[in-house]
Length: 208
Image (cartoon, rainbow, N blue to C red; front, side, top):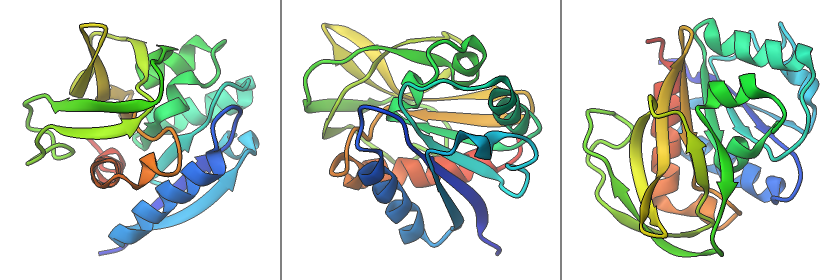
């Protein structure tokens, strides 16, 4: 079976995107399922038709601004039937772009201090979480405003309330996964992060 043509995009402010990009790339390469092209920082890679060769984009970026050409390229690419996997700070990218937030399915609000916390798996028939049980991570827990129509796959508690750790949703004919784990290099080496990332990227690359 041919490998899934994948664009891994890393960049932005605040987070150590190099270490996280390296961790994400290592996890995907370890699976042997992906033909990976890596782009750092250059958002013009999103302008149509630059994404056409790829079946899925794995996206790690923080803050920043996106031009109309970049936004339209990315959103149109996913809507055409391709996949988008947003990792951690992907929910805190392009704060001034409601269309991007709508595609991802939510946006960052706050986070508690970097700490160990408990992740629960929501019962579902998703191949991303099949066979997974609850687990602990040491990571930065993202608290988000999110569209209630998303399909929540995993949750954690924050101030007594449940907040999503992973969700999926459609965008046009394409598939979107958001995975809130992965604040830094060590967090991207967690075995459950790597498993959900790998499974989620396969899922997103598969046409609905």
